[in-house]
Length: 164
Image (cartoon, rainbow, N blue to C red):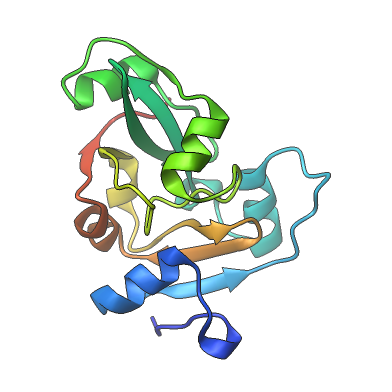
């Protein structure tokens, strides 16, 4: 896998973090359709990749602490499993405005990489079944492909079965 960023060298915080870490990754761009039903589904369709390899980044609140869950776009985040994975009791989806403020990204483009304020992160265990996975590169219409082990290392993520 080659290291690539947008033309002109102006990447997103996610691609800048990947470049700085010197891990192999590939950026995949597609034309974002504002009328798309789901951001993840749009990426699957636009890039022609299996839904199990494309992961969405969701921000939840576990016992009052913002926490990132990264799960396949074909499934849902199991909030009880996310709470258990970080030693918490209760989890609920975070307010979208709080997720955007904390991450520095807009909804539909939140990346687990290069967040303004790093949060506890849990990657669904299914990611480890693939040689590479796709996550948002920090903008709607932009995905980054990388090895799951690199995603875990760069986000200090735990892995756990948090998707359903």
